[in-house]
Image 1 (cartoon, rainbow, N blue to C red):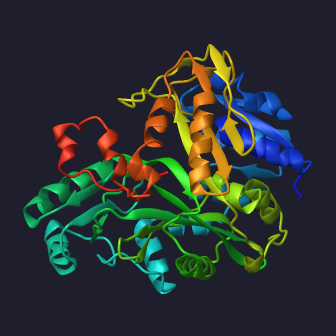
Image 2 (cartoon, helix red, strand yellow; image 1 turned 180 degrees about the vertical axis):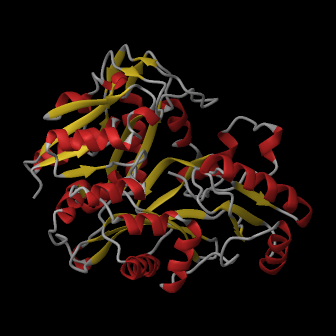
Image 3 (spheres, rainbow, N blue to C red; image 1 turned 45 degrees about the vertical axis):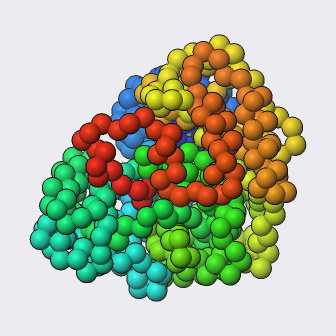
Length: 462
């Protein structure tokens, strides 16, 4: 096992890794920007080191500074968390060449699965169902039109290197395609430095269901069931559940087997998530693979009883997976609400000082957060304040417990999305599980005219 792990991240995930390491007797190093010097992950780690000013590009994305910190503190492993450098193949490769274990997949796997076209080819080779569409990047609007005529409208244009909805456009009829292609390609080039696009069939009201996978260095691969991630706001996940009540055992086994076969074919190791679109007719189709721990991993932990971050550490250290597929049991139902520092109506950022703070508690309630009374929520980073997770024997019980926990949660001094979640959890259609990837559109402010016509469904939502 590792002696010292440097955590190349901040916020709740950094604190989550500190706790997992401490449970295993591993010393930790927290890196931080000047703005985060008083953050809880800094306070609770065994050591800390400043790596730069507040801007992420100068600190949490500063690879030379992070590697210097690892060498100066004698860390023998780096945990990247999620976001920032967690899916940066170059960072993983530098760790590998420096003799520091990257707690995640290999740099080759990150590079392969991080390119949507290459990932689709890998999925096709593994016989994982794919959304009908282009086999690779489309070179022109004319080629896109020909493929669209074959698969049928509506279609979705997606950036090969994209995520979070950037470079993604829905095209509902032929007359829209050329303009949408140019706009999407321009967005992709500006956001990712790569303007290549591919095209696929657009499903109306699909669900977004993902499979949690784990693979060790000894050829063993398991899946830990699925998460329902259809509740998304502009391609970003807002609320997640495990399991999906729309997935029966037979469908779970088929989706899980497909995800495992993909992992085997690409030589995958450590934690990963294979994301699927679930069509209304029950067909499932590969979207992408996230090569890191997910924000929503806690709901899988709640229904399996497994500590996924500890499993990451053990697998990275060369240990065998502690469970076989037949050992995995899904018990009860878990829901996670992402509590963000945002206006609950307009969803605009609301940074500032927290002047009153009280976390909910009781049976089946978990809060993963980095904030406390008098803490500052900073404008430099993601607006996530906390992940509120509840467990119940049934989905109905979990919904009731989440409502209770949200009512107990006190965060004063900033605006949060707690009121939004309370409205959502009382929505009769949500309660009846009549959800899909565009479900939250009715809660959103009217979009600007420029993006209202062709804004698309999620494909790289985090």
